[in-house]
Amino acid sequence: MQKLLIAGVVVIVAGVAGFLGWQHFAGPTAPAAADASNAPDTSHPIDSPLAKQQPDDLVLGSADAPITMIEYSSLSCPHCARFQKDVLPRIKTDFIDTGKVKLISRDFPLNKPAIQAALFAHCVPSMRFYAIEDVLFQTQDQWLVENATDALAQIAATAGMDRATFDACQANKDAETKIVKSRKDAEDTFKVNATPTFIINGVKLEGEQSYDDLKALFAKLAPSGS
Image 1 (tube, rainbow, N blue to C red):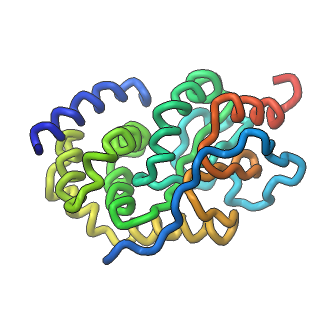
Image 2: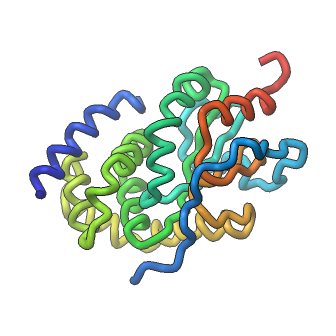
């Protein structure tokens, strides 16, 4: 089983290389896909500093992109994983890589394994964060097991992190506090209660979003002439 897990992760790590360059605490369940007939209200965006890029945010895309797309997600959320697999690659190609949109991924852990996975993802160099996040979403069914710690350690080893470093990352209480605070800030500021939830230039979208719905929203939010 361990050899199969490691082999699977090796394949996934290679595939996403180009993508760059306690107890379980109670958490909400992730919603199904949003109803496309309910168009988001862009006339009253949420006015909060957290709706904009923060100094410690990890950004995919140009920091100067006119549209800020914040995703609150849990690494244990299957809906988030499906969005990452089916929608985000097209968004990246058409909007992020072209400088129109920047993506900020923020933690909204639903359970202890999600916190453990986030601790690992935030322990790699920042330039590798999104690639590791992609690996963790793609291998959800392999590390969301009874012993998530050992399963995540295997993935970390495949990514070049030794067990001592991995264990130190897991024991980092400051990092854990920051991850949990991200969830609380989202609950307090944006009333987030499920994953994924998106804040796009202050416009809140709950649940999985289709490529076409996001494209339409980007068109509404884009500066005139762009």
